[in-house]
Image (cartoon, rainbow over all chains, first blue to last red; front, top):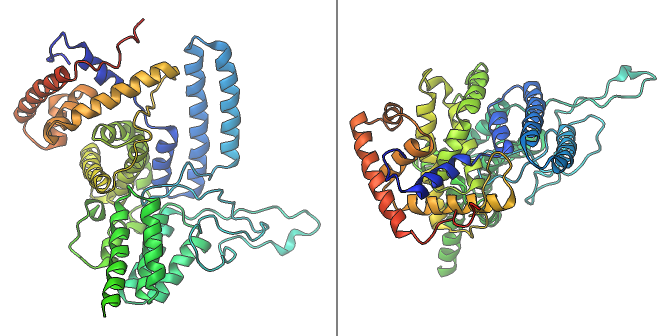
Length: 252
Length: 205
């Protein structure tokens, strides 16, 4: 603030306070993972980030005044980091945007994992199918205990490609096919990053296939859950269309 | 990008929703990953702080920042080396504008209005002070015209050189200097009006 009034200490301190603000480590991690296509690299990156965060926290603690408190916090952080490593695909929070973080309590895609309800299916829909991407158990396991083999998570490219196909189906006025593809995205591919887009596509596919009431209901729910999302405008518009249709239908 | 701006050459529902996933994005070059990682390392904090000072709440800034980098990933082939920061900056402005438009239409309770994520693990009292400081700063910045606000943020908070600001804003350096002067005068006037409010009062002892 060199050119600001030199007496204006408050301005200087306000700007300084703003400089102290930092995005959370989770936010940065989400951005990194969003840009990461290679699943194993993403996983390695997660671990690397955890280690970096632990180091940074330790450094901060070491320079702090409250050393005894720091020890407890470090242990807590180490435990939290260990938990994160064990739940490397765990969510940070539900996304208000189109690029959604990992699904709540996302289970690993294990061939031996019991069939479970996909937590991504927070909205109503048909019962989930077993993930086709899960690696099948090997027949040659012999006497060895079968090792859970985790199928690699879907890459961003895969997610994009599948939603592109759903979109193409919609463009061809094939709502049913689009619905199948969105189902596939959620339950087979278990897409995580573009779930909001997938949900909007589902709403449009429902409309396209004549299920307007369900489309309107889901649109309303989408807006309620993602009020600040840029995609909420679209959902709002979709819901509005349905409401207007209902009103017009009532007049006739 | 188009959907973020809320505009599209296609008015059909399908195409509007689909604009985020640009055609060919799936083949957008696996080698781009390393570039995006570098961008996140180099620019994430800058973009996030910028989004905050453009009026987004911390949680919204998280989402918006992620959105910015996702867009960058999709557009990676179109971003020339050396232009990353400019691209991210321009994208962040558009994303922020869209989020703010949406927020104006559907105002939410500012539960985390005073939330602050400061580095260096400040204590609770300091967190509160810094949170109030950021809230006051945002309140004042909100009253500035956008072009002055952006220049002030880049100069005073991000401490960028005028040449760099000119590059980001795509305006001549002289215009930057002029806007910065006006922004400082306006900000000082706003501060004087808010003189009774000093989040740091009593926190220095």
